[in-house]
Image (cartoon, rainbow, N blue to C red; front, side, top):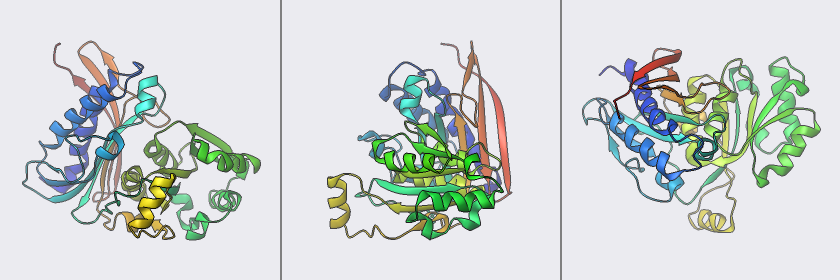
Length: 321
């Protein structure tokens, strides 16, 4: 298989997961759609001519083992050696409640190029911007007041601060951040979860979101980096343990919480392939539409080898029940 087609191969996997998960929208369940999506994505990935190694899997999020655990091999075993990151459902609560922006995602890069998150650490602080503001996202932004970073981004985008939209996860830990962003006049887009989707919104050229800020999952950060780097955006991250248990584990493991990571630290290669398929309707991707034995999907495919950004609308003929 030529690497040029890897983005499309990943799209088949994210489409399969989205098609399986979409049937569960609004049913208030999380485990069942996850199980279906994992199986569908696993089957699709195993049909790809590659020797794939999952760097970021599902076990930390699910608190149980699955076919897509970290360290699992996927693909036919023949073809390019690749690091793989997956999240069959980014936004399980969003899907369960029928909220916007639940997506299925997968990324790939040459073997050994992806940062493997330490198991002791769960959360990291993140800031994401698109290519218009990539030059002004400097390490100092991680410790500066939000107002300072917002002013830099607004200037880079030729906007007023009040014109900016900031994606923040709606969590108690972000109460001060949300208050600070609102105090300087910027607007806040809150979601209960789904910060991979949030990073995509922030990194997309001419998108409706200008920044992502706040603490989210480390695995989600690595996956998001695929898209951010492929889109020419910028991302900063730093370990940010939240609970006493996580802080103790991080300290005992000797992990340095002062190191600031950028896209090149998280993925050292410039050869990146990424796909995201909408499960529920969202800001940048439409969700799955079912019409009897026909289903429509919308996917974003990124390929740095061909320097392309494709928005693919596909029609799928589904097997009869």
